[in-house]
Length: 410
Ligand code: 5AD
Ligand code: SF4
Picture 1 (cartoon, rainbow, N blue to C red):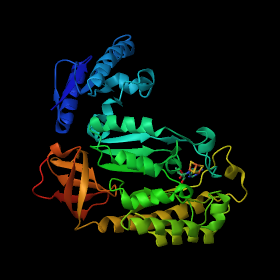
Picture 2: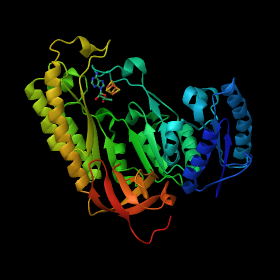
Picture 3: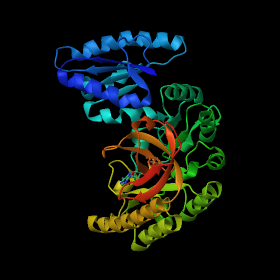
């Protein structure tokens, strides 16, 4: 059993919420304790009513930081969370002022606590050097920069100790990751060695940065999930050129073929922009053809919109709203058909599911397949934070439904 200490400030409502959080964390193996010393997790459930409430929280956090450091010295870990009204009001500010804080969770999000712990998002790369002509990111986020593998692996080990089973590596151009000769593929190999981590994902990638070793990792690294978000934006070479994407439609098709050669079942997703300046009917048809050729598991699609300061915003031949809306509807219909086809292809299969949270329907819990599809299962909440085999039985509009394969114990 892991020890959970919850300190409650303020009203009866907060006391009620503290009990609720303790209930939510019980399936992850947390039992409440009366003192913060030596606890595996400490939650400050804060209240904003009294004067200087935030200041009191920060001074309490200062004391807890010392306890956390003591625990680390003896080889343990203390997860430090701030909940309640101060969390709501101050948000990310809290982590900026007290980096020892691991989680900030507002009153609307308590039900997400277990998934926040089971699945960790880890920023490994920031910025972009690609300068796609429609995009503000290179101006707002600056040039590509990667964190060191040492810092990332250290943080991942800590997250795994706290109960993270899935690590999602984040970056604007995450597959451009490069630090001290480490590529993203090498980083994923390092992460795969960490005990407790069952699943690794990364997002978002650029087709130009899909290195040979990363493609190979999709075949060779068993913890790297068969899921890839690889935005293509358009299927027309003319539009791709005007977007400054640095590749054509057939380059992307060949790339996907090489990835599928390594991992035939991989779930592919993408971003699309319709109505980029100058996009003709034939250009749009080329996008539809590319979608038909590839076959996506799901995708995001957007109407082009002008972003001030970007080259495309001043291009001639801007497309009318009506045309954009009509094209988006056609594309989204096709993408939804593909999504349903992909989901249906899992029916009858037995898949490992990582359970994240209690579902809205009583007695059900929700988890995800290796392909990131949500699955609802009638099962004990003790499964949350764990991977179990599920027989996939049917699909509803937004989710798969299945049954736990018998003989497994939480
Ligand atoms: N208009 C429409 N969509 C855009 N995106 C980025 N900039 C724009 C824009 N100006 C989309 C791209 C990108 C995703 C994150 O947002 O498809 O991949
Ligand atoms: Fe960079 Fe992606 Fe924006 Fe292109 S769309 S400039 S790759 S962040």
